Image (cartoon, rainbow, N blue to C red; front, top):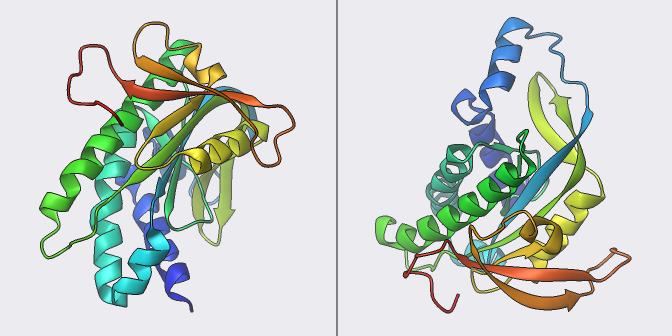
Amino acid sequence: MGQSLRIHQQFLRLVQQEKFLPDDVAEEIKLNPEDPDFSFKDCDVSLLFADLAGYTRISQRMEGRKLHSFMDAAFSPFIKDIKRFSGKLAENPRGDELFAYFEDEDPSTHACNAAKAALAIRDSATLLIEELTGCTERVIMNIGINTGVTSIGMRKVGRKWSPCASGAAVNVAHRICELANDGSILMSAKSAARMHNDFVLEDMGEHSLKNVTNRIRIYRLVSEPGDQTATGR
């Protein structure tokens, strides 16, 4: 089994612990462990991808056990940041990424929650290097956010259930994340339109994204108003 696959499986086990599952999902599994009702439904949600920059380089420089410890230490606070703002982690085949979706009856609320989670992840990444004893790697998370109608549900793998999200909006969110660099947080115009004046955004112009037909206007999330700590990122 390859090292990257082992890291991914370890991360999935971390995600599948009850403390990281949405309360409604955990409750449904408890009530109906063999046949919970997790039918897919189309929902307006905000989607967030967070990618660990330089993962390949990091995995080449660390021994297997040290890499396991590094990934556990790095991803645990990010998962908590997502949950703190009502995000739900979704199944993702890549071991160096986090994928989450945010939903709420108020379409502006879930977009703002995704933005707040992204800023929290950025702050956690900045602090993380100080907490990882003996680690000299700089932890950088590149983040992409998009909003749109997405198919949301649960998929059973073996005896375990994992939240899943699929659709064109997911692909756009992932491509936006690929566009991000040096710890930036980028979002689509659809997400930015729901921010109102709650965040400081920088218009980055239109971009062509892989496998996306139309060019997408991209905004960089700088900070929340009044935040003097985020400059130049």
